[in-house]
Image 1 (cartoon, rainbow, N blue to C red):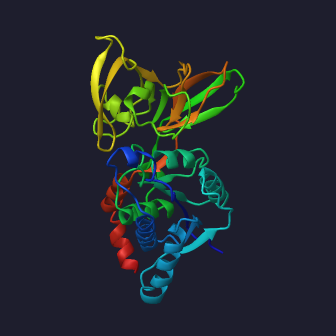
Image 2: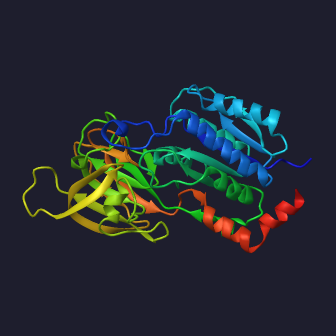
Image 3: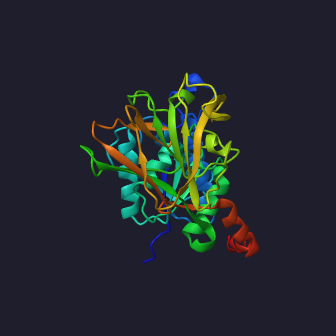
Amino acid sequence: MTTPVTVGVIANPASGRDIRRLTTHASVFPTAEKANMVVRLLAGLGALGVARVLTLRDNTGVAALLLRAIETHAAIAAHEPWPDVEFVDLPVSESVADTHAGVAHMVREAVALIAVLGGDGTHRAVAAHCGATPLLALSTGTNNAFPELREATVAGLAGALVATGAVPAGSALARNKRLVARCVEGPSRGREEIALVDICVARQPFIGARAISESSDIESLFLTFAPPDGIGLSSIGGAWAPVGRDAAHGLHMTFAGPGGPAGAGVPLLAPIAPGRVERLTMRTCQRLEVGVALPLDAGHGTLAFDGEREIEPARGDRYEVSLDWRGPLTVDVARTLRYAASHQLLREAAARV
């Protein structure tokens, strides 16, 4: 019996709703639009041969709206191929634990890839458990540096080409860098956290609302990449020394504190959040080389990963941060569809219908 081509879908119901919407003019991704994005994703996946999709339940309405759309499709548009959608039977806690458990389940089910609808934090949570399973990254968060803002239908077509093996992995997938923070001494020795975009040493001593939203809070930054047209903390690096996703290094930057002496560094302007352009004074900027561990001096502050505070270091904790190429594999949508066009794969698919 042939195993159906299966894709996992993680649609974070909480993405795009953090506190930055109270302090900036960031866009909002309502529940209905997240469900609609999954529906459009299903259309793209089903058109090119994905037979089965695994996704998660939630208490905010995404799953309920998706189920209603599936029932409507079966009644009036069954001639348009959609995958069979299965809702994974796992407890719902409305926390990041749902993502961790859902991804682990999908990996055990040997899904061909996982489509992720969320921001940098959601993709970080998925990357922590996806192993070698590739990700199809779609942006629905706030400061989205890692996932792409892309039409879900188009992404679904590219995802199907990868999941079915029509486009080989070597032509479709990209390996990403990641940052790893390890506690090497102290009460938390052995603790390890990853980031896909940035690790920030924040001056605020408590986790609080999690999101880094004030430039005065930024003591230092470690960046995997820094696009010149980016948003969020990585845009600070992009304003001074842009670094590509495929570059063999990252950046380490330090900043003067509020009320510091005049001439303490280089002034920079950067869009650290949607609608928020702030001034920072950069003290130092250096390349962060792969495999070189640097001390992560949090002092009396906190450590933030991909824009959100996660760790209040205990007294005596000493952390180090390093850059490596063990981040998740992701589908390069444009490159995948370019390969499909050059090999006439969509023409062949149309002929089979």
